[in-house]
Amino acid sequence: MPSEVKPRWRGTITLLAIAAVGALAYMFMPSCSMLADADDTLCHAIAAAKDGVVDWPAYDEGYWRGPKTCHEFDHCTLNPWFTSEDARAYIERFGIAQGHNWADLGRADTLSVDKVTEEVNSPLGRTYNAYANIVFANLEGIELDRGRSLNDFEYYDTYLKWSSAYTSQKTYRVNGNCVRNCRTVESTKCVIAKTTTGPFRNDYIDLYQTFFYGIDSIWRASTIVHEVRHARHGVSHDGGSGCQNRSACDLRWSSRGANTFEVMWLAAYYWTPENHPFITPARRARAAVLFGQRKKATFNEDVLWNLGDFYAINDTPEFYVEQASCSEDPDNPIYCLILAD
Amino acid sequence: MNEKVWVAWLVAAAALLLVGIQGGGVADAPPSTAVSPLTHHLGVAILRMDPGPRSREYRESLAYLREHAPEAVAEFSGLVLREPGSFRKWQLSYLLGEFGDETAIALLRTFMDEPMPQVQPAAEGSHETDLRHSEEMMSRFQAVSSTARIAVHRPELRDQVVETLIAVAQGAPVLKDTAMFELQKLLGPDFQSLRPQFGPQDARHFKPFMLPPEWQGLLSSRMQKHRRQEQELRDQRKPLCQAK
Image (cartoon, rainbow over all chains, first blue to last red; front, top):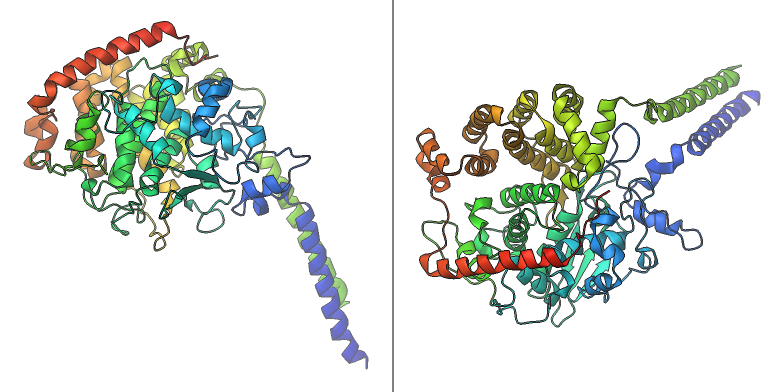
């Protein structure tokens, strides 16, 4: 009899002990960050809101000897919409006003800033910062009429003006999404945004957690320009996994796809006047490296254009959008239209 | 007796686990509240990088860092050479160009010479972006531009910078476009003198892209119009950016 009871007791005690160790480890796990970071930190933060107040996540790479100091061009004083209700209304009309989920993602908390870094920290605020790069790269800012014909180059006489109008006219709905959308927990292979097209005017762009907290505001802006190319016109990537990026590849520059539009916008951003009131030297430098990376990594066939080749993009946008930028070989240009459709 | 031994072992393991967790927390804490002037100015440079020269604090810190460039470069070297790609790594690569000296040129060169990590294949139709790899690439492009930037605030190092950029253009295919662009900016018309050092496959870099003649008139009038408008807008507005 005792010989049968003993193994049963031993098993029970072992199980209890393991459960106790597990419970202790769980209790003392530092702020559950390892679990919360299991992809959807933003969703966890929203779910944990107290009295409607969300503790917005912080970008997690910005540490220099202790205090948070990293800046992804999100500082409140450097983004004019922060002090202008008119600017916020203008940005809303890029498709955010029609978008879903923004109430949960900070509509009531747009002016929230991180106390340490003074960076705008709500997802909606960081989305505004992305659009601020599109809007205020034009010296006209919110005075620009975005509703004219895209063939009106007398009015849209810089590429930045034209692309601002294009971005506005060719999007219907921009949604927020708290999901991180990365391959695995803590993976850095992530979907930043995704566009779904429809037969009528029901295209929509979903922006994921990585868009808000994983990339800087200039990359966010170029991502929007990229996604808008997918939206109304439904232009898909035609390069499979044949580029260095291994996804979202365009076959070539003259595919006139989302990557071409994105890279051209980055070039135009770079080629703004040096004493531009909004674009600082660091932002210009960031646009240059984004240009280089996107150009190198997102086309199957090498793009022969260099940043220097876009020197006149903000003075003769019609040339760039209609002709020269579509060519793979500067010596034998293949003319094509990317504006007219 | 056997049960007691089991329980004792498990309790000991739990205690070790707790000590480990708490130890980890201590390791993550800031090492000290007292910071050296160098650390302080590096922190300010990072903090005020976006307003940049529009910020008085940034200008002051940059002046200090330029005076103490070798020590400042040494502070960044581990992060630049060993950290995987990140926004911070790009940021540090950018700042090296702002205050760097010959030690920065050497560090950036070492960084550019390191083999590029491989991209992992993306899932079929996933639209994934490998953020780490993208940031790594951008840091390297920045390393090229930062090397060129050093020649602007340290003209005495111009020859060394040009030599480095030529070597990068010849030896690192991924960085060639950026290196050639920076050389064009740095040398102006003298860039053409580099032609013998490059092969026929690089001819396009020496044929500057020009708008066709029929566009030149429009380009000229637009440039005048835009420069005039820019000046008018600047005169009308207060600066949008109120840097601290």
